[in-house]
Length: 496
Image (cartoon, rainbow, N blue to C red; front, side):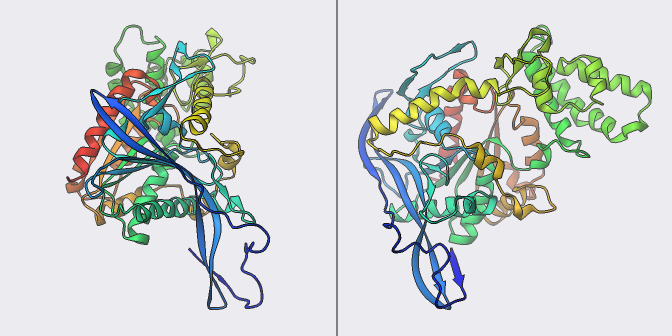
C-alpha cells in the first residue's frame, strides 16, 4: 500500500512517530507433538501479532514504512518437512467481525474445543483435547484474525474502521499472507485458503487479489458455508431469490424436527429442490396474476415442505423470511430454532414475536470456544496479552463497508471466475450443511452454477454436504467425514 501526501511540510496522515513507541512483532514459538494412528507429528506453533506497514510518499519523496495495524495469527508447521512439497493453508472465519477460533479449534487445528452437540452440550468449564483428525497431518496451517478480531488491532493513531470493509479487508489479509510466505520461504509450497461464511467471500476476493497484486497463484480454495453472492442471501423488497434458495433448508430443518413423519431427508429434499427449481419461482414471479387455484396449490406444497401452516404461508404471501421461519416453525411448542444450525432449539420469553432474542445455535457453543481459546493461547502456546480476545464483534459486523458495490449487489463470483480462468489449476472445495439457515446449501449451489468459467473448469469444483449446520463440525459424524474430505482435497490439489 502506498499513501500520497501533497504537502511537503505536513506529516503524512496517521504519522505517529514521536508520539508512541513503534509496535514490533511479538511472536512466540513453542514445540509440540501429536500422535495420530501411531504416527508422531512433531510441530512448531507460532502465535502473536505481526505489524503491517504502509509505504508513505510525501510530495514525491519516500517517507518510510509507517505501522498501520497489528494482526494476530497462529501458525503450525511440521518439523523437518520439505517446504517445496509441504502445503500450507491460510484459514479465517467470517462475520464480518469474527476471529478464526471456529475453524482453528473446531475443525482444522491440532487441538479442538469440545462443545458437545444438540441435546448433549458440554457444561462449563468445558474441555480442550487433541484433534487427531487435524489438517496439520496434511498441510501446515496459519490462522488469521482480521483487524479488530482476536488480538488484532489498528496501530496507535490509526482508524480501525479503515479495515472494516470489503476491499480493505482483502488487502490487509492478503498482506499478512504475503509476509508469512516470504518470511518463511514458502513461495514454492502448494498454497490454499480456507474460509468459512464471510470468510468465503474474503477467499473469493483474495484468490484474484493475490494473483494480480503479488503474482501468487493458489492451488486451492476451501469454502465452508459459502457466501459468494449476496443476492441469494439478502431478503429485500422485490428480490424473490432468497425465498427460493432458503426453501430446501427450511425443509431440512422441518424434517429434522419430525414434521415430515418418518420420511427420509433425501426424499423430502429432492421434492423441495424440484419445487424450488421450477414451480415455486414461477409462482412468485406471477405475483397477483396467480389464479386462486394456482395460489392454493403453491401454498399447500410450500406448507407441506416447510412444516408451516397453510394459513401462515398464505398470510406471508408465499414469502417466508428466514428468521420469521425460525421463530414460527416450533412456536406451538414454545420453541425457536437456530439460524446457524436449525437442529438447535431455544426458548424465547416472548412467544408471539417474529425475531428471537438470540440464535440458540450460536449461544450453545460460544462459551466452549471462548474458554478453550483463551486457555489455549496462554497455557499451551505461551502467548499473553491483556487485550480481550475478540471472538466476534457485532460492532464491526454492523459497520462493515461495501462501498465498492454501491448501486450493485455484493458478489465475488466475478473475481473467483477471473482467478480460475487465469489459473486453470485452481481447485475449489465447497462444504455445506443441510441445516445451515445462514448460508443455505441450495444458494451455494446456485452461485457456483453461475461462475463465468468454461466447461473444462467445472471439474475443478467439488461439493460436500453434511447433515449439520453452518459449523457442520459441531456434529461429530460430520466432523469426522469432513476431516477426511479436506485431507483428500489437499492431496489432490497439491500437484505433488
